[in-house]
Length: 137
Image 1 (cartoon, rainbow, N blue to C red):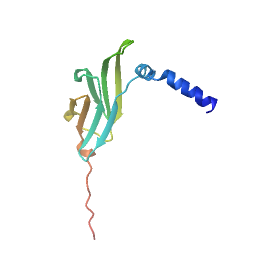
Image 2: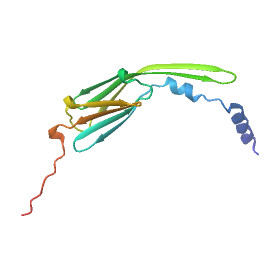
Image 3: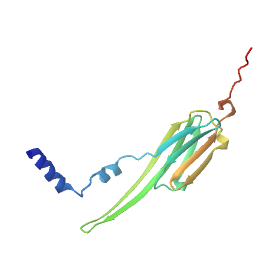
């Protein structure tokens, strides 16, 4: 076995069970994951908002920009045999997406279920796809 392999194994064994990743991830800014889909009649935006309450979400629509704002509050508690750790993270987020088509702002429907926000917006009449029949002469 080469010396480098022995050193790597020694470090792996020593640090097994320790994870620095959760500490680093919680210090980064969090943005919700967003999916945008489109049919002939509607535009749908789905946002994953785990740990966010519906009352903490604000949705605004300006021309072709949809903005989702809110605040995430979370508390994690971990108890092991030799330590007890409690972490709290709070922070506001803003996510803006450009819509693929003009929508009717007066008929927007938003639902929130199990941490998933779904916003359904009917397209404006002029934005709907129209099929054009080709006459054969």
